[in-house]
Length: 138
Image (cartoon, rainbow, N blue to C red; front, side, top):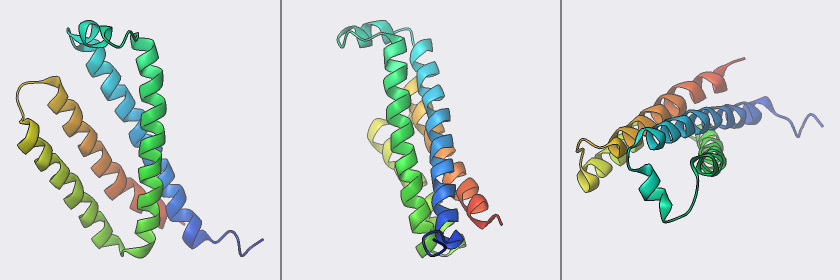
């Protein structure tokens, strides 16, 4: 049984799972608050015939599963890449995604840009800061 549970493998995976769950929960709150504060959300969601509570449930489940999966994958990657390089790579990838978003969609005065950029900043903090800190914790 001791061979199945090795701390050097379990610690980064658990850290990735926790970091991904944190991002999923907080990002769900960011998206739901942004949609609820948007004056156009009733007409945008009218085509889909979905209420805000139903959207919240779907967003919470989807984001929690998606970000947790990303966290688990990054936890596995953190076992292969040494820690300073891992954090730098996470920052570089999220900054590249933010730059690509800014280039394609622009940074007009829209709520969408604030939501996307705050989600990317949250992911950067969680996966480049929280994940390595939890993985190194004894």
